[in-house]
Length: 388
Image (cartoon, rainbow, N blue to C red; front, side, top):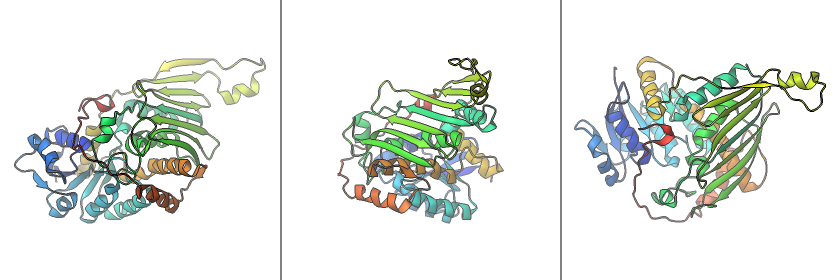
C-alpha cells in the first residue's frame, strides 16, 4: 500500500473540514475514498470535494461494512465514537477518532481493548499536541531540568460560543445527545494536554455550572481543583461564556515557572532552585533571582492536517502517531471525575468508579429535553490559530 484510502463518517463542522483537507491533497499519503452522513443535506455541502471515485453512504456502519476503504475517520456525536470505532476495528480497518474518545470511560475502555487486540492503527484527533509551544512545554517538564511540578493553573476561557452554536444541532449541549458541555466538547484538548504535561491527578473536586451563560442543560462554566500523588496541586477553569477569553497555562516547578498562552512559552528560571533557597537563605523576606526568557521552539503547528499526516505515515511506514487512540481515556477520566464531583458535591478519588458515573449520567440523559435541529454547518477555518 502506498496510499491510505480513508472514509469520513460524519460531515458536520469538523468532518466537512477533514473532507476538504483530504480531498484537496493537504494530507500526504491519504485519499478520500468515501463519506457517510445520515443527513443528505450535509453530503451536499461537501459535494464540491467529492470526486467520481468517492463513495457515498447514508450511515457509518454501511461505509465500514462496504470494504471500500483502508481506514475511517469518525466525526459524529460523541456517544457513537466507541461503537463505530469497535465496528471498524473488528472489520480490519484503521481508525482515527475525533475527540473526545467517548462520553464515559467504561465504553472507551472497551474500545481500547478491541484496538489493542486488532493489530490496526488507532489514533485520536488531539491536534493541540502538534502545537510547538505545548510540545516544548512537555519536553521541559518531562526532562526534569526544572525539577518536579509543584502546581499547575490553567485558565482556558477562549472557547466562546454563542447560542446559535448550541442551537445548530439537536444533539448539542444535551446529556442524551452530547453527554456534556464545555468539558466534553471544547476541553478534551486542554484536559489531554494537562495530563500529557503534568500527569494524572489522584483527587478531583469540581464545580460545574449548567447553563450559566446559555440556554443549555449542560455545563458551560467549570472550576476544578486537583491533587497529585506526589503532593502537587492544580486548578482548571474554563467557560464558553467569556469574551474576550483567556488562555494562560502556568506550571510551577522547583526551578522556576513556565507560562504559556498557546502561542508563546515564557520560562522564569530561578538562579537558585526554591528547594535550595528556602533552606539556605537567611535574609527573611528575600526570594531567588530569576531570568525571564521566551523559549525557542521549532515553530511548527500543523494541527488537524498534521495529525492526519502522521496517521497515514504510521499506517504506511510505521512512523509515530501524534496521539495513540488508547490515550484518549486519560483526559476523559478527568472530565468524568469533574462531572461526578459536581453532581455529588464531593471530592472524587481516582481510579474513577465507572459504574457510578455511568448511572449518574444516565439519570441526566433520561430527562434531556428535545431540541429542533437547524442543520447549520459552521466553518472551522482559523480555529486553533491556523487556517484550514
